[in-house]
Length: 257
Ligand SMILES: [Zn+2]
Image (cartoon, rainbow, N blue to C red; front, side, top):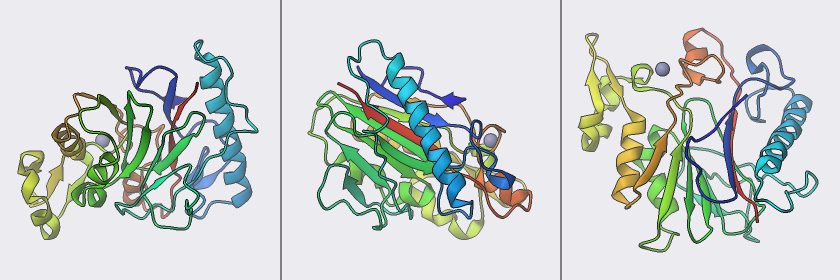
């Protein structure tokens, strides 16, 4: 089971987010955990990452316009050291460093699959007519420090871009306390106060406004909430259930041909 945009991000582009289903991990990682940094058994994560490749391969094969699908052997994910930064790396750069804290990745080449991991944060995928594609890991910290802008600055001005916001936590379930409310001063339209002096934030709304401010007209947001949907890993749901670990879903985008 995977989640996909309703509207294609462009010709020959495959894009999806994985669910919890189809992997080999157990316990809080049951079953398709793709995060190697969350306490899961390394062998299981490696097996799940091989399963991810076969999911990608099937999606590429289903694209009738693709003449030569990326082979499994030629498929190489570059996993990011995600730390809620605004750092960006280019997949094909000789300087690419998987140890650097980094939350955004782009490529200008075909057959370079981009991947980010999430479990409530927003996976945001960008595509352009020039061929450049990007994948962004955006939580509230990344949004407020402009991880979207730090990715979009590499796109030529006046280019037509498409954006997809994958499964992420809904407003009802993203509660913040009074202590950090002031950080959202520029986004008061997206905050609702609850009776208990807590506040809920529409992070997808904030992301959409930011994407629009860069001139992106084609923006689709998934209606899947990771907290509400049991087929998703949710860090916050696990915490509320006193489960101290949880798995990570992967959002993948690749341009073939
Ligand atoms: Zn929800």
